[in-house]
Length: 598
Image (cartoon, rainbow, N blue to C red; front, top):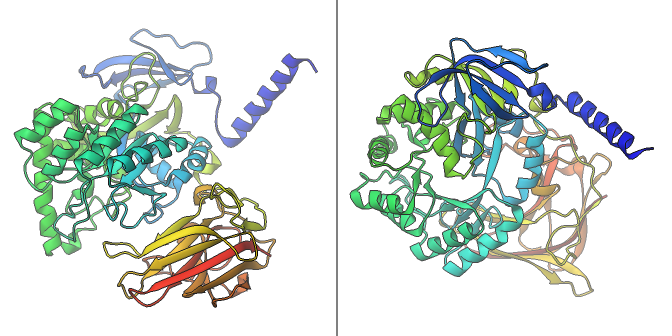
């Protein structure tokens, strides 16, 4: 067949696949939005105009535009056209509601949010989650590589693959270099250990370590956001050259020194007011209104509001981030509430909109969006009203476009994937891990991780591959347990990259593993939506091969929640976990090999 005919057939096939999945071609997304009041995000007052979108970008702006042949037209009379909104601080966590990627994406689209930063994911999850997002209608999601001090905030529960632990300039430099292979979009450094006077403080990152982290990140063209909540730590972050503070400083008023340092080093401010609202965005804080913790939240929030206005008036760029996904801070709705809180703090509605659009785009060096200008990416939001005068009008969403593709509005049909709660299950091989790979990855090409009880009093564990006496390798875990009554240490073996996609185990009967050790052991299978099943292992000091039928795995209560015990299906599994426990403060160990299905 002639090469031209071959290319044509491939193009036809790709087009058919795109249409079948609900993803239209670029030409199908060309649109002329007529007669809108355009708030373009440049600082110019709103003005009447039409906007032509072609191939996902803004092709023309004017009052006498003609629609090219085949271009869809939208009459936006009486509506405001804004750049798509940003939320630079979110957590797409399985512990929130909604918990699943498509449903979270839907929430942001419905709120007109077209670019989101996710602070929650382990680097192993970036690639599969990026691929998943590409298959559905979604905002563009930027992933933060997480770094903290040992037992610092963000490291008091996470493993070192999720949150890298650094406590010296050398360690910080090395960690940023190592993370480069995952292509993070920016760095999130947890630098401030203050717990808001409501819990024991965590450790904080010293200035030399943070400065080295920032310097290496900037060499790799990565911007750095910090978890910073105290005025003095804000000064440390600014001196170290961070690009943005991702929380409010709220232990007192921002002073002249902080302002001068932030100006000198170009530090932006993402106050995340929504997560600090005492009554919570979803109203869940009202029941605790008479508690000491609530009164402390009120005092902190008053400082947070004051400091937004103080820093803004001093010329510090305010950008939009909410910490959505945390308690009482729902996805999408919190972004809109943050805009309203900016106005409550003393910004004008126009200034709040600039913070949520062009200023936020600049904070992540996204020069292709954030304003409505010719050549920019067509991330657009149509709302009824005049939100530059009444910020609440931003809630009157009519249409939303991501890179020129309409994703919200009358007649929009999203891909089926936007209604799914997971990816289709994968079929995998029987051998999960024999611990023979030199790169420390499993036989499934996944990355093993550790898990232990969290908090300042935390189990310390070391997991490494060792030689077996009879030849070959095995995985060895040794731990000193914390003093908690339910102290434990565990090894997680993901069944798919980053534990994102589920796998289908229905062609097998159970799990087989070689094991020995001195600990109380459980084998746990973890699946979608936090579902868990477990069965005991009974190790001795000698190697033995144990087979656990799937039928012997008992459903466990949902993590930190009440609900019915899960029913085993076999097509929704994501991880195998070996959990070890013993006497509080004691030492335990185990070794495993040849983990497989039979």
